[in-house]
Image (cartoon, rainbow, N blue to C red; front, side, top):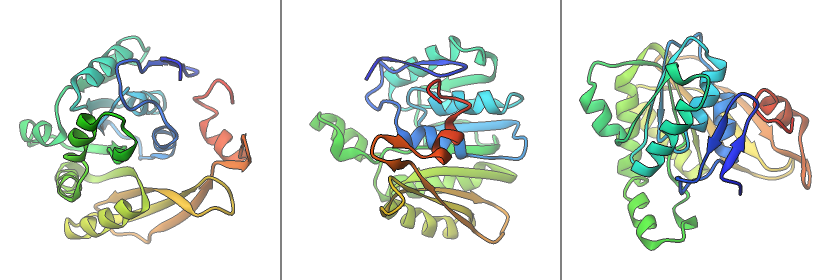
Amino acid sequence: MADIFRFKQFSVDQSGCAMKINTDGVLLGALAQGENPQSILDIGTGTGVIALMLAQRFTDAQIDAVEIDAAAAETAGNNFKNSSFTDHLTVSPIGFENYFEGHPEKKYDLIISNPPFHINSLESPKAKKTLAKHADGDFFEALVKYIAEHLTENGLCWLVLPLETSALVKILGQQYYLHLQKTISIHSFEESLPHREIVCFGSNEILEEKSKLVIYEAVNKYSEEYKKLLQPYFIAF
């Protein structure tokens, strides 16, 4: 994969990141919604691609990003500086727990995260061990707890998760009084089983909305729904 990924309104250098731009991240960036959010937090920003997509869409918002991997945080910071949205973007090279503990009163209208869960796909045993420490049950409980504490009254949280993890996070959400508002199941093909869920939580209790998104209509042919969703961002669409 090329180190520079060019979008319509920005470019992302991913050379300093172990976790490259992937379908999960861009789908989350495109699907996450909020009612005119003024403050957004991207937890585990990686290359910064989700934060940049949100900056393109929510032009009035201030977007903070946190990234525990120092090299990735530096890469994201450079990507922010090289974009036309630089004045609206900040990155902190820190884990989300330390970030929230350092900003106990800070609240956000929108919190986004594509958390680490591709542990077995990493080649380095050391990298596997490091990421595993941040992707177990305790990690997700801490994530949900801090999100619940730092959402504004009408704020929303959007996460992209594998199915097993999504089931756990839904239970944790109930424990911390976060109400499941949307579940979008992600399918490679119309007939295939879902492999990811994008979930939205909020403080307000409403009827959960369920939907489905199919990425491919045939082998190597993206669905019209997928192309329409990413059209504002991808040059190819």
